Length: 160
Image 1 (cartoon, helix red, strand yellow):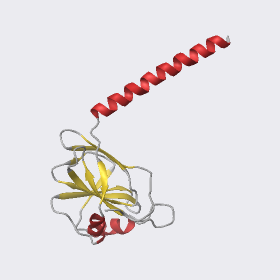
Image 2 (tube, helix red, strand yellow; image 1 turned 90 degrees about the vertical axis):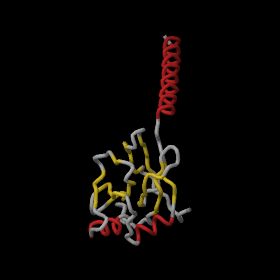
Image 3 (tube, helix red, strand yellow; image 1 turned 135 degrees about the vertical axis):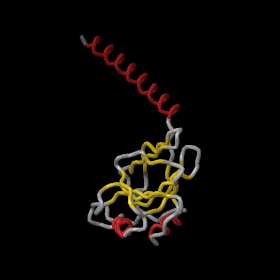
């Protein structure tokens, strides 16, 4: 009986290992993941309520407690129902920027500015948030199919 459990455990471990390797291989070969690149000038632009030309602006989260504000270059399309477009010339935009530092913990976390880059390192847009990590996926048609803040907030000074 004990031998059966050991053999079944080994078979299960081998199957699981093969499955994980297969998923990793598929994920690496087909992913179009980009990244955020820290840029203190982007933070200053947002904090001065400046608007970059040829960008559409969006926020994620609630109006009173936004997780992030992003400006997306006109050559790309943000394809996500989780983001809400906002007029960057409106008072709402200013309110979102002011509220971005409150991240639900009752304390203020210093927001950072980032450049959103695609897989090839091309500039896709800008990001302003106290959250310093995001999943960025862009398909071959220039659609940003995933732009999601990751629940990791770093503390410290922004690096250019």
